[in-house]
Length: 469
Image 1 (cartoon, rainbow, N blue to C red):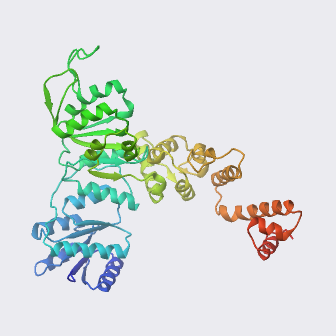
Image 2: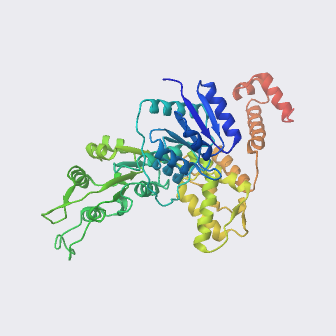
């Protein structure tokens, strides 16, 4: 690939300096600008191979600059940078025709690699997308890399009606992603219909999906449209698709293949144009192997896969999510939003959250009602948060095990606002093990050291450090 010319526009001089140094070190020619007007003036006489632009700048912001550049130079790749890592920023950037989206703080090597990819794209004369669709805001928040990947996928699918399969644990926000995919798609003005397979009795699923004719079964007194007809032209979200019975899977596959179906008890085909977004917390590949899910249907649905991480894998997002949910709860209840004490924020990021984002949202709603003061302290948090039933929590350990007792002690300490738990617990742990080993060996230090996996010198030093000599 030929070395290229890169322009960087950012009102932050430190960002300009860092990028200029890094890009020059990669053999690229870099010119920096403080605002969008300077860039437009320079474009009158020359053109770079790629432009990096901040999204939030005084005067002309990055999206306004992007729009003007795409009108004048539609083939020029533009990378949008922002410290405001949310779905709307990502989708807006893609919809305005951005080559890619770079959330701050970014890894400098990844930034350089992205620039080089954009230059290669430009030099190969590939036409980037250039569309303008303004969708409503969503409550999707995430600075974690895994969530940024989700935002990118939603942005890249903003011109598509392709099928999407969303994987994730319960409470991770799968329906929220489905709504976002619909809102940022060409079908945004058409219906979005959601149906949870696990919540419907098996003998009613066909009627719910495909509707029924009058007299089709006992109680069918009128013709009823199913969810497919209701979603015609729009999106049908099938939640917990892994729970769909096999016979219904066969009918769904036929609809996806032919675009038509028969109501229950009907003889006339009904044609529909529906985008399918499916979601599950189950491992569908395993369900296929077990013969519980049709392989051909799986491949029909699994065109694009989006994996939503559990909250424990995106802990850096917890404080921002909690503040957001506290504000939402305050608006719902007509009260002033609660504030989180810094130690409370830290405690929230350390909890297990088996119920994921939904559990955090419900906790914030509970705190809005139940916390006594305006500032939420650790002792205000509901006790069940510290007793969460997760695979590594006390409830999954023998009740009289040392790990259970240690976990219970740690829970009590955290709820009391203790910090540096390891430095507090480690001496006591070592003292207990030393005492037990010496008692077991009748005071024979070398044998006790062997039982503990230490050398004799280590045991002697530990006895001195712990005041046990």
